[in-house]
Image (cartoon, rainbow, N blue to C red; front, side, top):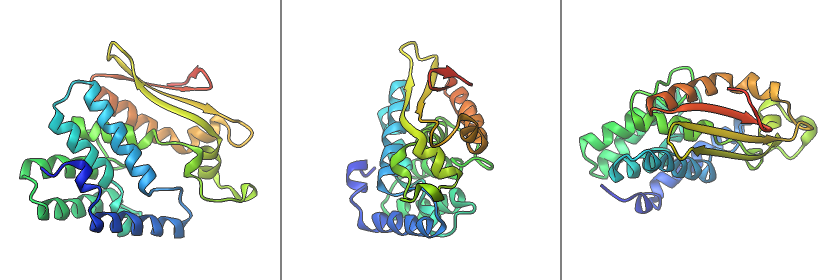
Length: 219
């Protein structure tokens, strides 16, 4: 298996990530480029490592996190499935084993709400890592007066932290929100389905998912 640190330097992969994000820029979406995929890779690895999964699976979680949004190059709709197909080709050409490819492709194909299901631990970790990346720096619209609800929600988040407790019984997403830009109700309007998926993902890992906004537990 090619180490993650070497794979992330692959120019073809970097081109796919860049061009996929360019498509989302044209559609008015928040940042889905290297900052996002790198953070997702690191968070997915943190989850599996903390829960005691083997180092090989931890390494695969970084790769899945880094590749998970390349399907946006094809279309935003069903991007998890198209991204899984693209990841299959990339990893096959890089001589990953069938087992390694199957694990990564399954996770990518199941990371998005609506169609995604945490069918294995890697898919569960990827879901939690992806859906917890809510932050002000993802907003690209510089005109606050023209923010849509996604801009408002992300811009309102001053701090976000996803953490597993020492007993490894629960995983908490703690958000500090500036309600001047977005309300808690705004957050729930666009993130409720994502949080439900996070709860299912946490359960797959033997954890209880908790959402805390401004020190108030909501889930």
